[in-house]
Image 1 (cartoon, rainbow, N blue to C red):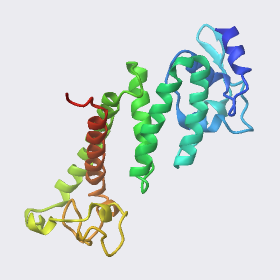
Image 2 (image 1 turned 90 degrees about the vertical axis):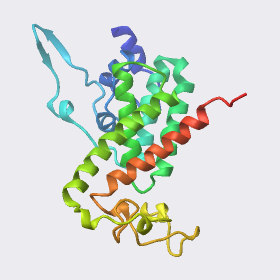
Image 3 (image 1 turned 180 degrees about the vertical axis):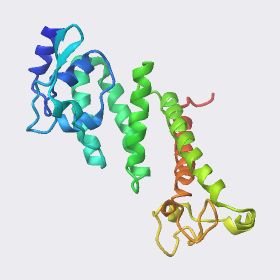
Image 4 (image 1 turned 45 degrees about the vertical axis):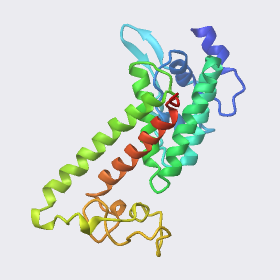
Length: 243
């Protein structure tokens, strides 16, 4: 491992990886993008691997042990993903096409959730964490859909609990009141007047006079429905045509 680690650390990558990340890459382990985001900073000491003294004792710099930098925007995620991908492909060249397709899937989520980049960022984390527990091809649409639905279920459960706690029977709108509502407006993606002739000013989740995306109670359910719809479309497009 030491010789291979030395060889990998010497590779001329666009974003050089520290030894601690190379160790995880070579062992095919999960890599925290928050820690990697810190590690690709030019001032970071790439010789950050833990010094093992045996008998359960090890030496590691305190600042590097806890260093994390949040990944918030699509550009930050793209930079960190490419740094991670370059290391993985350097160690496992056969995974290049797989990771390229996986990035394309996450990039599609960024386009569909341009108003909230945290959704595709969490989606990426969910898929890669699942891979760490039980490896599969990251570009497998079935696995991606499964991860989407798992994330959606957790998000939806939180939102549903809040709505059930706050809502009363008399406050529930009739089906007619929430018909033909503009979902794009609810997701802050459509301005007045609606190009499709749908209703603005009505929440598609509770029927209130607000955008679903602007409401703490309605946003989780709105996001989960949107994610389910996208997952269904991805699954349908990936399925082979019927003869």
